[in-house]
Image (cartoon, rainbow, N blue to C red):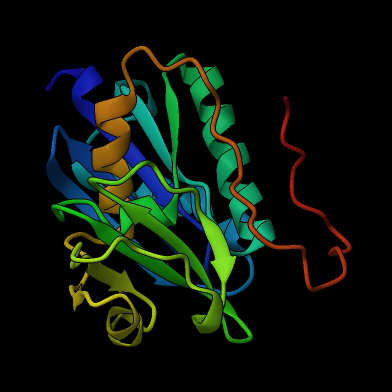
Length: 218
């Protein structure tokens, strides 16, 4: 097994620790645990378990993929900081992938990806044969417009409701979140020089924790 073919991907942008190890596009192992607190303490034991199940070590990895949000502020910072640290220590690329894009992996044409932003809000982004749209936070009443006759595929939170608004049809994600992140990261790894950066689309709605997440270096 060639080291540069192994991609380790993980995400803690919502109330879970999700991770996958891929050889090319083949999923060797995948783990996902629901966890609302303690992601910082749980992430590396889970990653160690994943590598152990595959019989490989950290030095065998060729790429890191990480979910950059949008989602929980602290969770995003935990994963991004971990990915940056691993990439630096192992001398391999780390590629950030948004959850909005990860939901579209494997789907063709125009795809509208939607996540729950709480309190009646959505994170929204359109992908496909359109001028690249930026991710945004919106409500059902302020959904970005999709060109007529596009008939987009809608995936994610309240997909049926959103599809009615933009004359589209509904699909489930083709891959679990960590697997999708890994597939996208692998395709982008070679030649990338940028570091993963958190994707924040809203202001925090809670006071900072007493033990803040690790700082993200420039």
